[in-house]
Image (tube, rainbow, N blue to C red; front, side):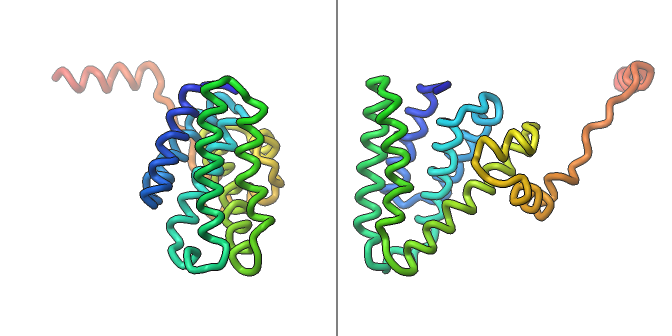
Length: 186
């Protein structure tokens, strides 16, 4: 794991935002993790980014709260976040990863529509976060491998969002830069 202190900070803030049902804060925290993930390409950073984003989406969709099993899911998520924070503080990466995975495994224990909806949120979150990592300059193949998605899904999503269409910055020649600077002092 790289940047354990950053992950610890993000998870603490995630716990608070989840309790307050602050979806915007959760998305903001996820975006912070994506910047780190793009730089480090660390699986733990990426997992946290996907989970935090997914939690934001779950909170955002208030109708989910009416489904049978939601209250238990919410309690389990808070418990797993708390345990993950404790695991990082103890430098226990094995249990940290186990607790993060536990959040995803709890989905399989849900029933009916809630299970389907939340599984879909997590699946879409992976593709969304993959596209953001790709946007930061990590190759499509590497990004797809890091998030465990197909290159096809990533390419399709990146094509829809216009990420693939972004033109690289055009550099100016030395002569053009000098002329520009001279114009500033005239």
